[in-house]
Image (cartoon, rainbow, N blue to C red; front, side, top):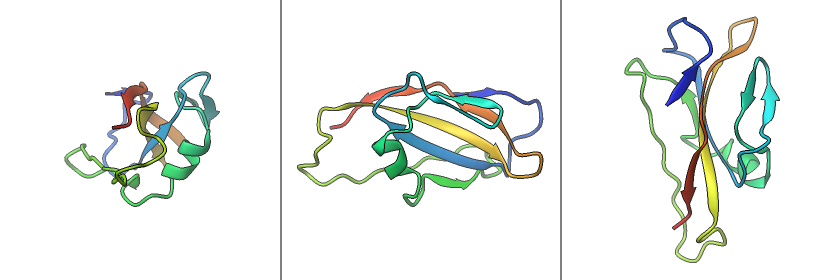
Length: 105
């Protein structure tokens, strides 16, 4: 669930879904605290297809991460977060989700 940092409509904002192996301390970005650590998994997921897109009119989107059968993250706990970025000056983060913990299958 996104925590709104702005009361403006969010449709059409740049939507980023990112993964990380840790959620604390996170990092500051523009006007927000991002609840993911900028580790190798975070850096790896940012450029993947489907992890960054314009938020559609429905205000909902999803993505998936295909994994090979014997991937090295099997059993590892990780976190996901959704970040909205307003690319119109003055650039800002109008909404960010809490980190959602999951375990890689």
